[in-house]
Length: 477
Figure 1 (tube, rainbow, N blue to C red):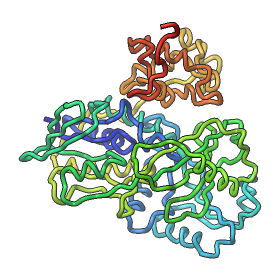
Figure 2 (cartoon, rainbow, N blue to C red):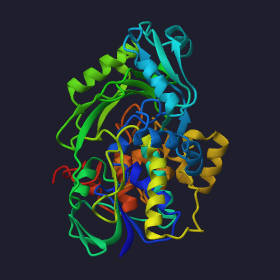
Figure 3 (cartoon, rainbow, N blue to C red):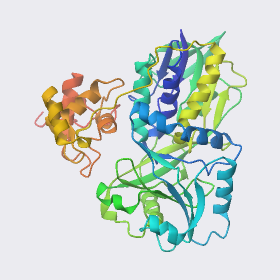
Figure 4 (tube, one colour):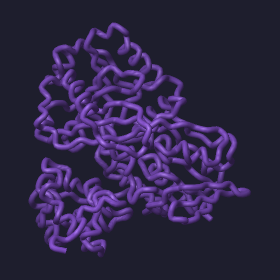
């Protein structure tokens, strides 16, 4: 019998797990994929919103502002990439509808510091590549960027170090409430019993709730498509450049990533399949053309990859962060779309505060808030690299030339928990394969390392688990 089971290992589920590890108890995270950060978390803008956009009085506003202010300490403790780079919301028609004034008013009501409206000329002094058609913009100095998948991995590693268990490839097919506890059945027929469920299942969180509650929720997956430019084009902008928001979201942005790429997107279209994340010609064309409105000199030749993700839009248009009103012991985290990433530390703190009171949990006096990231030779000087090679010669064997990733880093990524089990897991932890050639050169060697370290046949190595095998058969067999 578990005290608490968390369903979902995206940034919300892992943030809750890490916060929960500050208490004593028998805790488990169940994830339907073979790794953390395989859903919305791995495919979003990576923006830590300042909090000016959310409607005052909403849960989105409350958790966004609180969460934003927790990032510096959290990133320092867990060593994941984060920085406050500032943001603009750009107007092209002198903002005849007064949207910028409304956003500034929201910023004041939400107690967001460092927001002001400045002219197009002032914006171009800070970001010279911004279109001459921009007449004014909201300047948010405290807006930030983060690597969402690296943050999620860091949270999971620290939660595990502090006693939280994880099980993967556990898709939930049935949940029943029996007396004072829950019985959870996974697709592989595994059975789990727990006193409390924390539902952090992202786009599937409505399904988890609806298995138990008479109060039904409805998630509409809202698809966003992106393009990523090579680091060579990092000069386009240092700040996040938004266009005026619409009812469908915050619009197309042109923004830097923590690793100096440039991101263009996302689109925003409601879809029916929660797990379908293919990019489309129409979607990418829309994102690019709207991106050109912000930065007219964007070079299409700089695109190295494209991707998409689905956001969990709930009909109420706000976060649901609360105990179920009719199912005792079920705690719902439903409809966590933007600004969910920015809000995640605060959502986790609030949730665990409520659940710990419900179960009367004791504090874990052995909790260690610190987690060390994998050392990256790309971030070290030659003397530091030489010292590492003396300790482990594999640091001298560069596998990914684009991102300068050594074999030692890849091996460590596999053997940490929850370690990489496939090519995408290696990419998220080390950046091997995230450069200009997009794994064109390093794939075979990474596959060999995965096979060797996981003690599996190379034909069983996958791109992202399930049936995504790269080798179908051997030549001449």
